Each structure stands twice: as C-alpha cells, then as structure tokens.
Amino acid sequence: MDSGRLINMGPGGIATIIASISLLVIAVALSYAVIRLSRLIDEVKSSLKTMTDEATPLIEEVTTTVSLVNGPLKSFNRITKNVEDVTTKFTDSANSVMDKGGPALRVAGALLSAAQLSKGRKKSKRAE
Image (cartoon, rainbow, N blue to C red; front, side, top):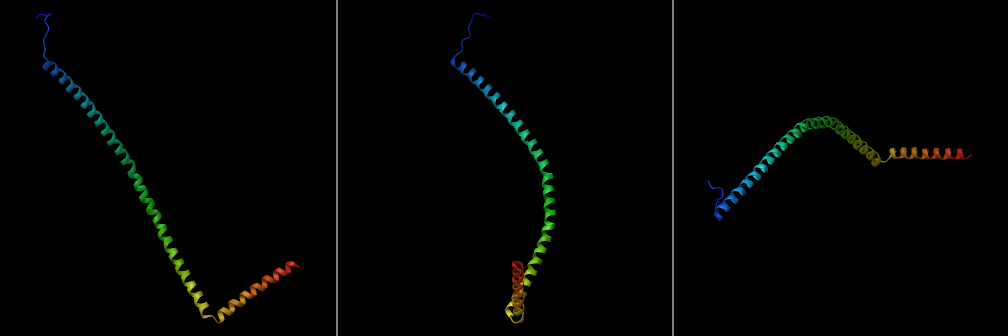
C-alpha cells in the first residue's frame, strides 16, 4: 500500500457516510429515550402500588367509622320522631281544649289573673 496515495471519494460516498452517522446518532437518542421511559414507567408502577397499599386500610377504616356513626344516627332519628309525635299530640290536645272553650278557658283565665295579682302584691310589698 502506498501511504502517499489519497482515496478519492465521490459525493455519493460522503453522503452515505453522513447518512450512516446521522442514523447512528438517531438510534442512540431513541435508545436513551426508551431507557428513560422504561425507568419512568417502573417508578410510576411502584408509586401506584405504594399508594394502593396505603389507601386500602384507610378505606376500611372509613367504612368502619361510617358504620359506627350510622348506629347512633338511627337511634337519634327514632328519638326525634318520637318527640315530634308527642309534640303533635300535645298541640292537638291544647288546640282541642282551646277550641271547645267553656270551663277550660275560664280556669286558664282565673289562673292568669291570680298570677298577675300575685306579681302586683310582690311589687307593692317591695316598694314599702
């Protein structure tokens, strides 16, 4: 081989070398991106598993808490219903007595008058 001899390469050879180097750079960039993406997917998968493992006991505790709160609420609902029924019956009875008038109104008026007279006497005793 003659070391003084130059290799003549045409424009097609140079273009081929440039194209092959460009394809090599693109292949390296794509493989780097795929490796990074696979690491990201692994990290997301482990984070999701951790979050799921931590969320399951919390959901079970919430379910237990809701069940424990619902019991007293049902009891409170029954008590409230009973108080409503008693109040309705009392109101109906009071309205019935007032509608009929007669002796019940006279007794109520007499009691009211006696209470007012008693207040008046207490005030006059204090003034003396």
